[in-house]
Amino acid sequence: GGGADKTVLARGEDRGAPRAAGQGGMLRDIEQAIAGRAIDWHWQPKVDMRNGLILGFEALVRWTHPQIGPVAADVLIETVEQSHLLESFTYLSLDVVLEQFAKVQHLLGDAAICINVSARMLERPGFVSRVVQTTARHRVDPARVMLELTETALIANPAQARRVIEQLHDHRISLAIDDFGAGFTSFGYLREFAVSEIKIDRSFISRFTESRFDQSLVHSLVVLCESLGIPLVAEGVEDPETQAMLVAMGCHAGQGYGICRPMPYENVRGWVEMWNA
Ligand code: C2E
Ligand code: CA
Ligand code: CA
Ligand code: CA
Image 1 (cartoon, rainbow, N blue to C red):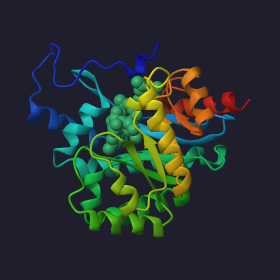
Image 2 (image 1 turned 45 degrees about the vertical axis):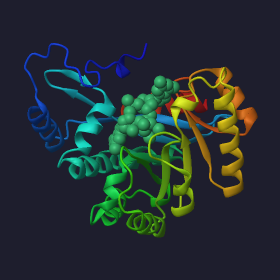
Image 3 (image 1 turned 60 degrees about the horizontal axis):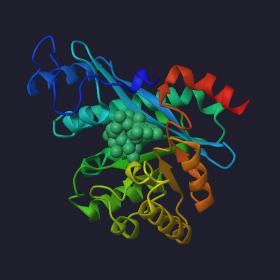
């Protein structure tokens, strides 16, 4: 299964596209898609693995290039982050996803909507007010909005990032550190920034049942997060064994194909009814 997650365009390769879309062509196509709102977000639930309580949904971008076909999310994001389109893409994602969330929030208890935001956006003037305005315009309770800080580069100006995160907090919008333990994320972040949630990188979960190292690492994160009072989330939970071991270890929140694959927004209502039945 998982047709929706199969992508034609793998990182850095172009399998016989009908026409060569060089970087400039690709950027023009993305720009057009942003302008035409021809980009979609699929929703993946995050649950309390002990009892199935829905804690939130993460919005994951899905884009089908008109000629090339589906483009992998991380490939799209990498291209967008290195271009002048980062702001317009981010603001489109906030607008589309919060508009959708507004229509189903009453069905979801206290569940949050989690939106991925590139760490580079923290440096853009007006970011906080744009987030706050978009949330208000769609009549979404800011306390139910969580931004997942993804990063492909070191935060250039930690002092400014810290101020921005505090401003978000003042507006009751929370912030998760994504992909913790991978790439540039570090323990320093937990000291410097007011973090509401930590998401352990999928790479530590995928071999979890066999890897003593990964088990030790997750266990130490559970202890750390408990003492800091920060919820910990495991992503990439693919099977019941991993889920059971995580719960036994004290990592209760999880997300992954083993729980539910990302789904089109249109399916969320039906999925929630089924899940809660
Ligand atoms: P991420 O934020 O770490 O998102 C989780 C990724 O893992 C998603 O890939 C999701 O589909 C996938 N996933 C979920 N459960 C499982 C599982 O059990 N096993 C495996 N193998 N994978 C699982 P996706 O959708 O391809 O997104 C890739 C990355 O692209 C995201 O990683 C995130 O960094 C970025 N991204 C996606 N949407 C957005 C967006 O709207 N804005 C920004 N800035 N970044 C986004
Ligand atoms: Ca994420
Ligand atoms: Ca992640
Ligand atoms: Ca990631």
